[in-house]
Image 1 (cartoon, one colour):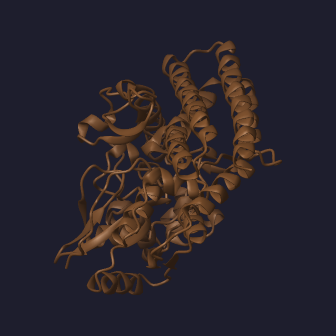
Image 2 (cartoon, rainbow over the protein chains, first blue to last red; image 1 turned 180 degrees about the horizontal axis):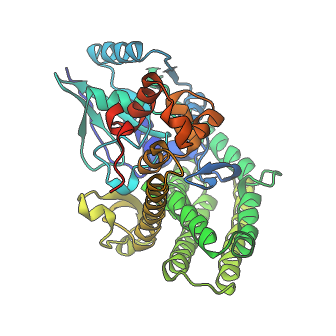
Length: 332
Length: 134
């Protein structure tokens, strides 16, 4: 059993699944477009949620939100289903494949056997597409992989029913209705407005203010938690930032690519300029990752390096605040 | 990031030959995609996390050998879990899982409960019961 699905590699899993599924359904939409319209750029610091013994930082909205917002803004209909019984989850997927519907799944990363060992943590917000089934295996299109791959029936079951925070509970999703004509312009504007609102939100743990909060905390960590823990936390920030194209620099570049595409669609030169600015901010995020990695690699014990890092992140926050204010103006 | 600046460091990914897609600008400043084989700051961050876990596993192992904690604690670390994740896998409250870390309590656990743990760790009940520290 195999559906006629084409795999395209993408930088981020959720964009990639959305873009690939929509392309399959006849709506040619690029990954940056999905990311921009779905307002994928985000920042939130969650001190009460610990991941791998360090406070969680997320550079993306809740799993599933990008695709949901995209669908709402373009007028698509997506069917989403979670299961309490594993047997039903398997049955639904198999029926979909029989009906030639490639299906998106939310899965846990820990048991994805085709990933390098270093990536396999208990992280449950990964997405992939199943596009076929054989006697022993499911045919998998994981958008962050160059090529398609497979998982045995048992392995797929395991990743679909991974446990912990954001447990996927077998979640399956696929578009059921894709209109022939979509209002791209309106959707882009809504997407940009949403991102500006998120990043400029008057909440201390979200957006630009969240970045500032983390920057200030970096100064305190070595004193309060000790150098070892501070280094571990820093490593965690960089991991969250750079792992599989999610977060920091990578996300800024996708967003810049989106602004470039949007500039053409909306016929708005200002967005073209802002795209360049976003690229520059993305480079700053990368510089931050380089500096942070130096700190925890050399296991430097000077308090000063943390101050420098903190200032670097504060500078990024300032730049982003100016940027999103300009962006908001550019489309209003 | 310019296309020619896309990092091609030998990282953790090169072992499996996996390449990541990134967005970068070409010579005219237009966005395009490129493949990256890895980036040093990232592989350092990943190996830092792996080291951290190896340390925790070693500590847990020593503690099991000294009869300070039960093998459940060791396997939890080995599977890169924390108490929240483990309690979600076995379907028990966190305080109950924590209690099972005590060797005395562990010794009295029924096979039924042990099986829940063993299944979560992908091992057999025998392996969990007859844990060898060396």
